Length: 132
Image (cartoon, rainbow, N blue to C red):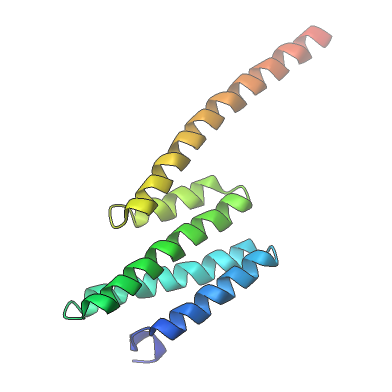
């Protein structure tokens, strides 16, 4: 029972997404991410528990789900937590083209930045040795 078992309405999703965006604007990215993830999780619940819903409902749920997942990932990227961003996108992978695209782009960025940080580190190491 309780509030969680009550299906999320479009109005409630709009309010929660607005809250998440406000937190983002205040640079409270971790709280923003939590708010967006809550929406994403609830959207999944609605989809699983009510397959008989009309197309309009399904459409806004999928839209809200996609937007909330991407927003949560962006919040984590803002605080430099690429791993959390990737794991969120992986968790919801295969449900939406935009989420999958973002996941692919972020994977690429991480791969490239890993190699560039390793190059930087070895460059620094050589510099340190040269100065000794």
